[in-house]
Length: 89
View (cartoon, rainbow, N blue to C red):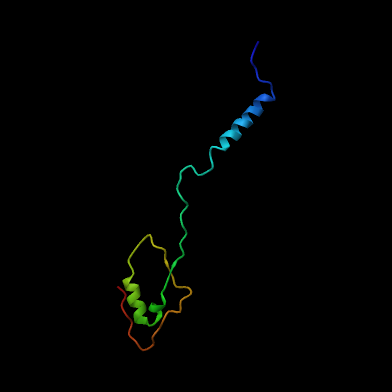
């Protein structure tokens, strides 16, 4: 007697095997957590007190190529009409 699968059994077995393997893989095979999205850095209130305070604060910031850019879109940067321009480092 020959052991052959009927045309209905072969697709059914393939479907069951696929469902069994689907349970083994949950899509998180590498185990690495997704990167955390950080909000851009903002200017502190103490640096907005005067133009010199802003220049001093900016000069004290570490240089980094991986740090998020500084967001100054919402800050009211201080200006002075009677002071001399301060050189940036």
